[in-house]
Amino acid sequence: MATSRPTVSPSTATDILDIAEGLVQSRGFNGFSYADVSSEMGITKAALHYHFAGKAELGERLITRYTDRFDDALAAIDAAALSVPDRLVAYCDLYRATLRGQRMCLCGMLAAEYNTLGQPMRDAIVRFFDQNQRWLTALLATGRQTGTLRFAGPDEQAAKTIIAALEGGMLVARPFQDTAVLDVVIDRLLIDFAGDTGPFVPLTFASVTSPSPSKVPKTR
Image 1 (spheres, rainbow, N blue to C red):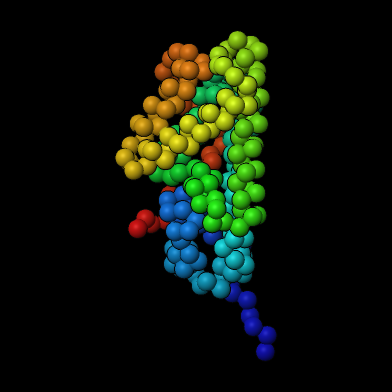
Image 2 (image 1 turned 90 degrees about the vertical axis):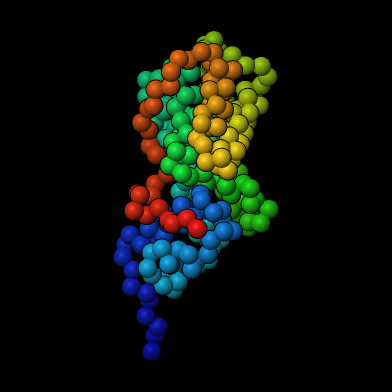
C-alpha cells in the first residue's frame, strides 16, 4: 500500500516559513530544529519535510523570501517622492522597525553563523548584502552629485560603512535590550552623511518582517 502524504493546508508552507523566520531572528539558524517548528505549529515533522526536504532548503528559502521583501521595501522608498536624505532615513528605519519588533535582521543573524552553513545559504546571504550595497551605492552617488549628502571616499565604501553600522548597531542593542542603542547609531549616520535632518518622521513602506503577532514563536 502506498504511503499517504501528510494532510496540509495550502498555507502551511507560508506558516512554516513565518515560524522559522522568527526562530532564526531570535535564536539563530543553529538554535532551532524542525522539532521546534512542528511544536509551534502543532503539526508533524513529516509535514515539514513534505514542504522542505531539509533544514538547508528551508534556510535558503527563508533568505530568498526575506531578500524579496527587502527589495520590495527599497522599491517603495524609490517610488515615494522623497529627498535623498529622507530616502536614507527610510532605509535606516527598515532596521529600526525590525529591532523594535524584537527581531534581528535575518541575514545579519545568519552572517554570524556563515561558516557553519551550506554553500547555497552562503550564496544567498551574499546576494542579500550585495543587493543592499548596490541600492545604497546608487543613492549615495545621487546624493553626492546633488550635494544633498556629504562623505569622503568611494560611494561603494560608504555604502558598506552604513550597512555595517546598522547591522552592528542591532547586535550591540540586543544584549542591552535597548533599541536606543541603534537609534544613536542611526542619528550618527544621518548627521555624518546628511547633516542635521531634523526630527525623525516614520514612513510606511513594505515590511521586511512578515509574521503576524500570532505567528511569532515563543522565546526560550
